[in-house]
Length: 175
Image (cartoon, rainbow, N blue to C red; front, side, top):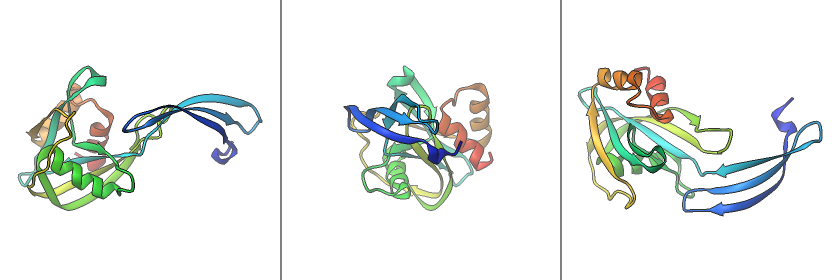
């Protein structure tokens, strides 16, 4: 079957918040049968692997309600309407770790969980960092953490870094 053979027949918005909406959807398969899916429609996001002048990495320790606690991860954020992924990455790096970068490289993009959300995260590497300031979002609780390459790899291996975007960034960067 080709992906083009599936057709969205109907989408009804169940709930909307400041970041995403939840749609109840009806799809038609190539054989003519219909099926239902609930989909979180998300504008997309970015994640940044900031590299320090010493060759280390700037991560963040952030409280995540859905994870029920603090996790160690790379800086990230949601695209605003009409914002390019690179512009979003530049904004989020300043907001979350207090640095701007002169050199940017796109490492790739990943779907968070394509079984239930459209969220696609664009992953960047940021280098040649310099101090910059911007206010964090009021609902964010973030602590920057500087780590060596060896510490990052050990944290991934031990499960201390366990969110998908951070693990994918480490892999895409070839750490």
